[in-house]
Amino acid sequence: GIQVEQSPPDLILQEGANSTLRCNFSDSVNNLQWFHQNPWGQLINLFYIPSGTKQNGRLSATTVATERYSLLYISSSQTTDSGVYFCAVDPNFGNEKLTFGTGTRLTIIP
Amino acid sequence: NAGVTQTPKFRVLKTGQSMTLLCAQDMNHEYMYWYRQDPGMGLRLIHYSVGEGTTAKGEVPDGYNVSRLKKQNFLLGLESAAPSQTSVYFCASSYSRQGNYGYTFGSGTRLTVV
Image (tube, rainbow over all chains, first blue to last red; front, side, top):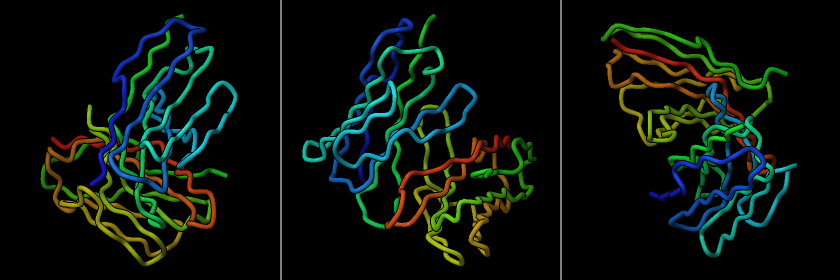
């Protein structure tokens, strides 16, 4: 099956810093999503982005499908950004069965 | 609009006991999923459903059964619980290929098998 690698596995930053999280995948995809799991365990969908660039406030994401990677940018980090960020992909049309990476744990220090 | 609701939120089982986890969504989503999350392993798909009355196996289906008798509900059953099934279980739903693909997750069920 498709392999999903996220880097870095852990990231500790001061409040106000910017960060870039990377997701590499081993095959072409038709579905790619980014999720944030907060310290209480809730999973929130951030972006559906199989290709191109999207922005939502301080967060933006870019997927370069031809080169099999996606980037999540977080600007002006806040303590509420702490948690684990997951990238998930699906190579197939229609089923939308996502394969998750193992995540990047982001800790924002006040 | 509650989104995706999972019950129960916590449960402790003895080895060999059975239980059913309930997932309900009120967004009229076609697709529903059960994942398990273990430390350091991300989320792994157990079973999924692409519509009422349909189910299919995911990556780690052994020891689990599912049913989707109504579009809004997706049940996950453990017939004979084992300690290896200690995990956090997440249900999710998503729309069809014509609509928003984004997943909506429930808040999770923390299951401990002793």
